[in-house]
Image (cartoon, rainbow, N blue to C red; front, side):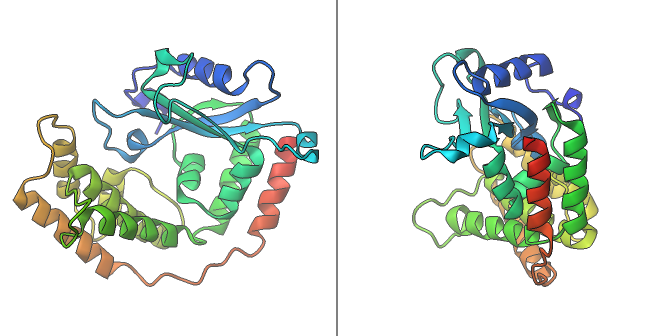
Length: 273
């Protein structure tokens, strides 16, 4: 997916200016390097109320880690309310990880970061050769523990929001079902293809047990401002699909990351230098 295919309410140039003002703020030595659009726009179920989630990586000089006060691991703007000075981007939240923290997330095979690198629509890329090399590196080592992370997210969200036995927190909304279903389909997809796919529509088409019609109906209800929860019939279909996908998921393999950490470390060294 390309940035031009999205309807985010901001131009790519405006987002780049926003990132530069926020990350490379006066008095810092932070250099913004790579940023892309994450969240519901990447997942395929953004609605009129969806924020624009910008995620990426910046670099500080290596010598800043030689002191007791190390650089902040990330820069966040408009994530928890509106940040002073960035009111013009009130519905555009930014999280930029410093390279060291970004690398640790890559080593953990955090699926959000893997999706960002491999799938997300790029809005700013100051290191195209290095990003291409990173994409090849990650794909070479997949699936690693990415399917485990997808499954863990799906289980956590199901038991937190969709378990009908809960007396608190029960929220059978289209958004909750979509997040859980996307996680389950994503786990199966990476097992079958040794790659990732972030868009829930594409996942439902690609995975044998996927239900594209269900996804379409859930997305339509999520985008309906007059609907808080899905109707009983759709909830039953969604719950059946989720339970079925839980049961149908292939056994998760042993995690193999041989050589991966060293490869990420080497990639980080090249980026920082």
